[in-house]
View 1 (cartoon, rainbow, N blue to C red):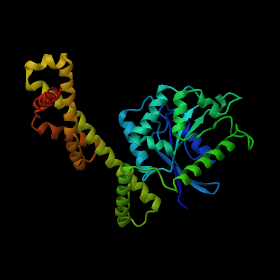
View 2: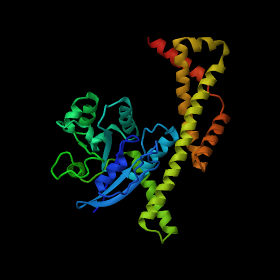
View 3: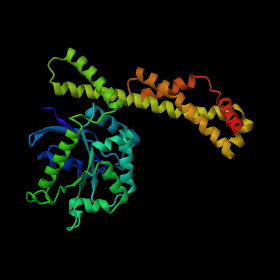
View 4: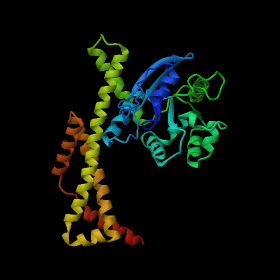
Length: 346
């Protein structure tokens, strides 16, 4: 029986490790009570739970106070490689507390890195259930906030609540017990799995990553016959993840450097126009267009540099050097022509 891949998403401190342990019924995941940045890398564990094989993939906090942009990229790439060709279910973890801009950013980030369609494969799981008023169930709490209610509706009304501290020994059938809530979460996982005929959420990026992992697995198997399938998969994921980090570094450096050079080309093309470019709306629009053209100009060099690089840092340096060697683009003429066409139409 194929395992159902469940990805846990949430900001640092949401309780992902504790919820994973609660679902599996054992302390498999390391719970961090002191580190402000929580889990640094994806953790994964497969276990049979009530007759179904469950693979839980716990991701690092998407919004840790000490997380840099590079750490964010590494976390997303790690998640993508470990859940390829795609997860069957996303569990989005939030606390029973005020739904702030930080939580809204988390949801936007999930949609950005996957898509809003991912919410159709998702359920919201609230932690710190002891904060829920005695007379309320989690649906009552959700309805009090418009943004939170909209999120749950996009998840087709699926939401649950657990408490990793006070609800551990709740009686069976009691709403305020993890035993009851885990049973409900497992039912939801089954419903999402069956509604999609056992298919997983995927997109072109996840499919491409899956194909690359399969290629790596074949290469590893041909050279290391003593490894288990789990070890082969792990090594393949690491290699593909490393390549993705290098590729993202090259493309990122190319886009930033290209945008900078695009604006620089425009500013140096005619120094007499500099005051107008910096002080008028049309001038600022011209600079924005030059930056956009330069940004696109940097994508291909970034990809080419990444193919030759052995690390993200090397990819960035190679990309910058490649762009510096390119002749300046005639951004000013292109933008002037575009403005002329617009004025003629008007």
